[in-house]
Image (cartoon, rainbow, N blue to C red; front, side):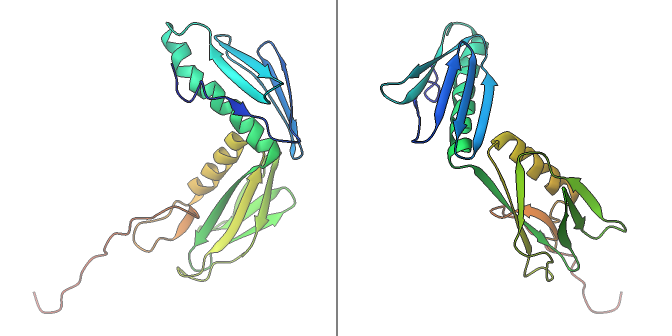
Amino acid sequence: MSRIGKTPIKIPEGVKVQQKGQYVKVTGPLGDAEMHCHPGMKVRLENGQGTIIVSNNKPQIRQNRQLHGTMRALIANMVTGVSKGFEKKMELYGTGYNVKQHSDKLVFQVGFSHSVEMPIPKGIKVTIKTEAARGNEVPSVFTLTSTDKEALGQFAANIRKIRPPEPYKGKGIRYADEQVRHKVGKAFTSGTA
């Protein structure tokens, strides 16, 4: 039995949960989220204790054992998303590199001959703290926030894919908490051959 799967999900104050069969809808101060659970899982709402319990109907089936923790984590992410929300901080390093927001698009200048436009998905907010990077020391910083953890992570990964950080000077787009391993460049020796 999954240790994560059998842990009850606490419902914070201000969050309302509706459950009908396999359908779960969570409403909170930041919005609402809904999901149809896998038929092998049983979702039970404990109103007296203010918790949601996900149980595995048939633990002898391998796929059900695998999905038990996943279903519980997805429901817990919905509850956290509508109550607190999720955020990803990103940094852009490189001389002349910058990011701007034009209505519903992010426009990146990251060393290509053209600018790269990324449409912002519905439900994701972008806050740009510093538009332009100053070399490899002072980055351009922007934050992505959303109630949907999956959509937020996918959008952040797509942005990073535009120009991943290179290992010599670290130029490119990266997550704020990402560690980039640097390589030593070519060493030139003086003297005649």
